Length: 211
Image 1 (cartoon, rainbow, N blue to C red):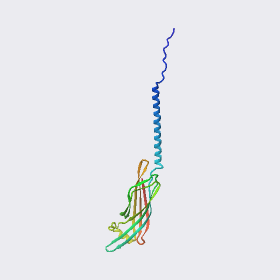
Image 2 (cartoon, rainbow, N blue to C red; image 1 turned 30 degrees about the vertical axis):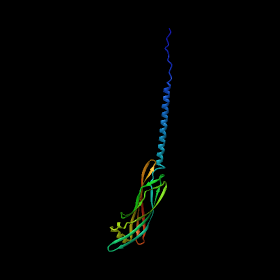
Image 3 (tube, rainbow, N blue to C red; image 1 turned 90 degrees about the horizontal axis):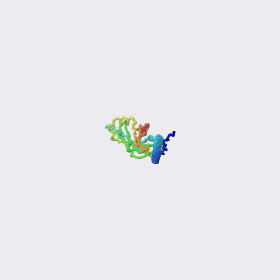
Image 4 (cartoon, helix red, strand yellow; image 1 turned 120 degrees about the horizontal axis):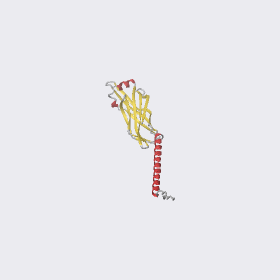
């Protein structure tokens, strides 16, 4: 008894359109993966540079010297009055340790007598190049009229010792890659002036730098 054989249908190969679509999809995945990998690599390199080579550093403000440029003092007993003319020459330097320039805003340096500001000089805005130190020579002059109402100046002149404080502050910005970072540097110097010798007998400076 013959058994009828069922017709076997041959397997059909995928249509050319499907194969082409799969190849395009695979190519898109490879291209997208490559682009993402490149972007991540660039971002990692920028992050490493930002944390190492281009990391923002504080500017270093140094007072090299404080010297008397002009000094004249006299005392009138009746009525009690002190006449004082004083100018200090302030030699400072600002070091920029960054690999990029630092732009600083206009500021000022001042001279104080027992916490009271009695004179100032402006510091124009400017820029300090990368790995560069900028020198500044400033003249601080005491405004005599600001001391007329201070009774303690009379006793200090008679004792032969005048205490003054110079104060300087520089504020600026450092651009690290695409980010602006604020930096500042401050110096405070306490000086004692000997009235009889007309010289500075003691100078103590304090510094504060921050980001």
